[in-house]
Image (tube, rainbow, N blue to C red):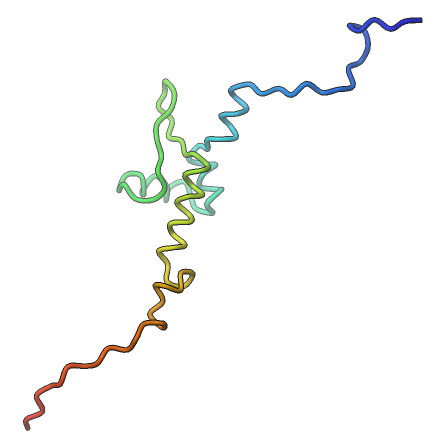
Length: 107
């Protein structure tokens, strides 16, 4: 007995790429970004208020604060490069010693 295509169970999965799923993979809310960075949401709010920390923006009609995952990763890389413990070119241990200026030693 032939099986009608509409009644057969489809074994191949059709990829569903709707905008909501794509947005959830590309953007993070404050709570999710804080978890991603290992920080508290309050820290991100304070940094945003002070214009520090990773770049963020408002999205949607309610203006929710969002973070791009790519921007978070780039910000983490910038932090690593700015830290002398991970960036050996900034390490004070590799710097050539500076000579002290001669002090007037009159007593």
